[in-house]
Image (cartoon, rainbow, N blue to C red; front, top):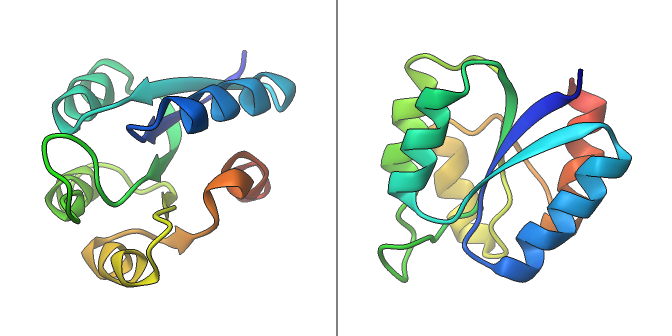
Amino acid sequence: MSKKILIVEDDDLYQNLFKRQGQRADFEVIQAFTIDEARTLFAEHNDILAIGMDGCVPPGNHLNTEPLIRDFRKTFSGPIVAMSSDPDYQKNQLRAGCSHKCEKFDLIEFVSKLI
């Protein structure tokens, strides 16, 4: 059985990259493009081992994933990786509860070393 990773990212190109990389690394990539979708998928998949978190996803065009990170941390103790391309966003995500940070294109390889 593959390992599940939830990726909260609104960019189709990155999500497609994660999906391809995940297949090669034996990850089932659960894709969330919005905050609401992330909440729903997180609730539906209780066997997620890691979460990749962009800083800005719909609705909005500013750092808006901090409340989502704090909510996930209430019940999720695994790695949550800040993968925003903005260093200031990453700092705020780490303060909100992310345990790690990395470049987006390195996410799957990075997570495979954590779990």
